[in-house]
Amino acid sequence: MIDAIRTAVEEPLEVDDALRAAVVAIVEEVPATWAGILFAEEGELVLGPEAGSQDPATRVQVPVIYRGERIAELVVDGPGDPTVLPAIADLLAEYCLVGWDTGGIPWEAVE
Image (cartoon, rainbow, N blue to C red; front, side):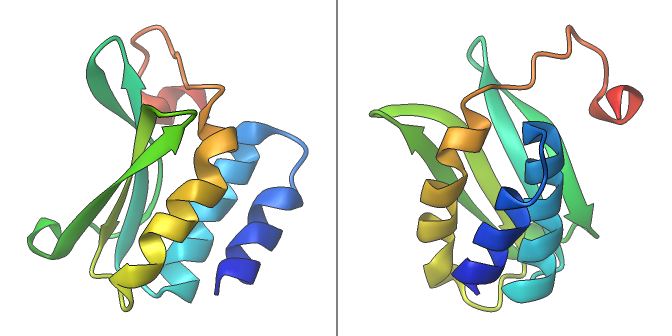
């Protein structure tokens, strides 16, 4: 499962494509009903790439930490195996580091 997500993020040339591939892989491989990444921007959490259908009642949220600083949150609804999420968050940390400063433009509009 972790290898499938690692493969998904290593194939694309652009970081944004890697993170889009990661949330799709999480939905397919964990499996989950929905996965998204919330980026920490100026004290706020801003939704970045997402895949699947949200089900907030089953939500699990895991911090994405880089060098001791929370840079994002991995959010997964209905995970089949929530114990793998911290390892996935660690894998995604360097990809989330670049951030997604869209200047207030909704994520969908910049795709």
